[in-house]
Image 1 (spheres, helix red, strand yellow):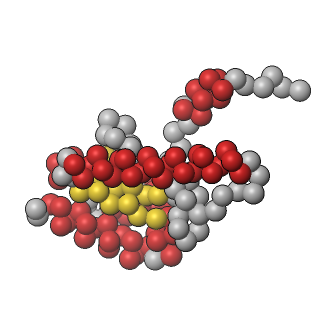
Image 2 (spheres, rainbow, N blue to C red):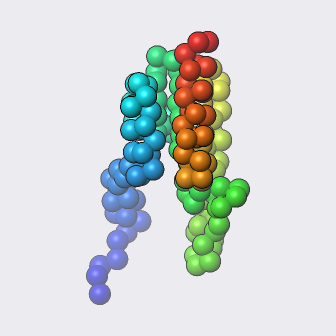
Length: 138
């Protein structure tokens, strides 16, 4: 049997994971190909936006249906219900806090669901490019 990790050890290990989703890569490659210039996963900005254009005060978050408890597809797993309920609910609270932070600072914030991108990739890209273009011309 392996040594179980302490809460602190597991937290430190999980904190080092810097996964970039394939979906995020598809989106950013498409936007970059269309001439949009941005930074990805900007850790210096609150909430580590997936896409950020500081010049135009633009942040875009691509929210996973599971991790952000999408109203259409989000489900609490059937095992460890208390843990997952607390975890996913806290993610939603954090999303609201991040939204409020950017709104107070008069930034342009867009949250787009994973299922929007998977269901209509071109439509989701149009939504993002329209959002960015609108912010550029403010």
